Length: 367
Image (cartoon, rainbow, N blue to C red; front, top):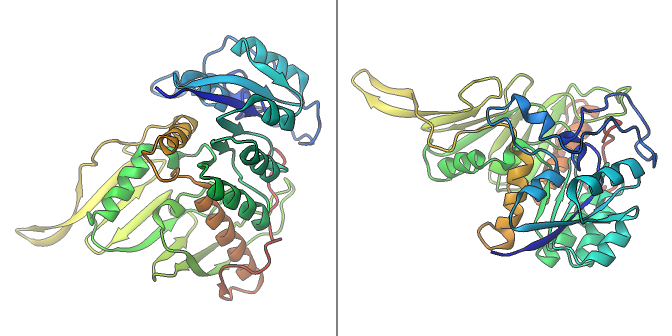
């Protein structure tokens, strides 16, 4: 079995705290060195997942890495002294750093989770690549601007480093099963994709799109909110270079894949998770009939678990890129910015790629 030296940069909510304490919902300045830290229980097991079926699924990158036999969690970097101290108490003989760059230059890490706030994440990703890190997981959102996303994707691609951007449901193997069914012709030729309004680069549609987006139209966007976010809040459509269309419609559910001979849906509010319909011949004629979903079915709570698994699968040659890869997230960011531009122009078509790579999004205070 391969053994990987791993480290965490940022010991906030997704870096460590989600498995040790409740979330802080009161706004604070994300760049403060001494951020508010709730009371921590360094012996607690997977606080957030007590309501899931399994009851013990790790959620934070620290706990997920600690749980993998292939990984030695050897270091953590965090400016907040209380969090850094708790990390050391929970995980034992780990190196503690107040400076992430020092950790990257010193520890010869194979895998790094960058769970900081969004500012500076592009620089840390590129620095990790320069320091020889072989696999990287970041939190969402991936970056503020197109220029930052371009740098992250290019640096990782040139070095052959898998980049997984965010612990989101797309990491679950059931999404790979859905794409396998689509590519295998189970629902015929794919005609369109429908999904909810994109938010925080928590996109579901981009995993099913292999052709680059060609143009977008968007309407109904709102101005920047009091929280600081100006993410796209309207509705719209993107057309791909091969003629497919993705529709962003409020209330559409997580993902709907419509083909000439059937349909696949995933809706978070439905107890069955993934559902499959196929057109079959019946005594009453050809009808669209719901069919059993082939395993695996979606089970919540495994977002970081399977994100890390994707990175390891890439390192060991079983996967070409993570399902929620930096490349796909960068595409989704560009589409969202295009939708905003279109809405600002009264719903006019906006061609992609966008020329101005300084364009970006502001996110909620805690991102």
